[in-house]
Image (cartoon, rainbow, N blue to C red; front, side, top):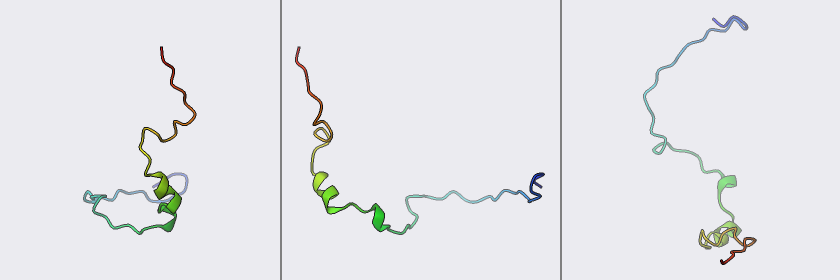
Amino acid sequence: RDELTGDKLGRIHMDKQDIYAMQSRRVKALRKTPADLKNSGKSDEDAGDDDVLEMED
């Protein structure tokens, strides 16, 4: 028993679950917008480096 609230505490033993095989609902908020899809065409090297200048020795 929990001394503060008087609730009973216990443990539940479950088998391991493969999180990659579990079904989940597709949420509209997590989908990419058409603008995100258009910007994903850029290479990773070019993304976000517009403000950085490279200096030569």
